[in-house]
Image: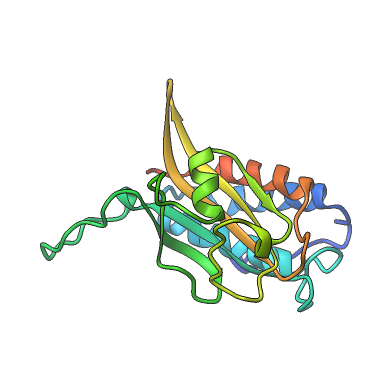
Length: 200
């Protein structure tokens, strides 16, 4: 099967729960045999974004309800150190990773006393944040003024008793209340799979 076909949705998928289970199944097949996090996050963001566009019952391409951004912000420590002797990426930042959508913020500060925005809060609180209306969210960072709602799932690697913060999976929607509990549950399973599927 061509890789692009993994984002095709059967007509039988009618619920969000079924949709997210199908996307996870497709993602598992798409990432099989590859553990590089850049490659896997690129395919994951593309698959999620394209699949949502092909799901008109809840999202689709309709300008009033489409997901307009899907991607990752990853802790700067996981990016390569510059080879030309320039300073490193620094700490306390999430850097823009693979995504689909319009250009976005290059980094997000996650130093507790300086952090702001949904991505920083989800990362620091270690929990998914579902924001029905971004314009009333304290400290919201508006990368795209058309965005009305957002969901952010943190990515954490568990090694024994330790949790290593990797970054976040972030989705924006053009509709107020664009995401719900079914989306949260589906995306948390996808986020957990992506963490396990990559070498960090």
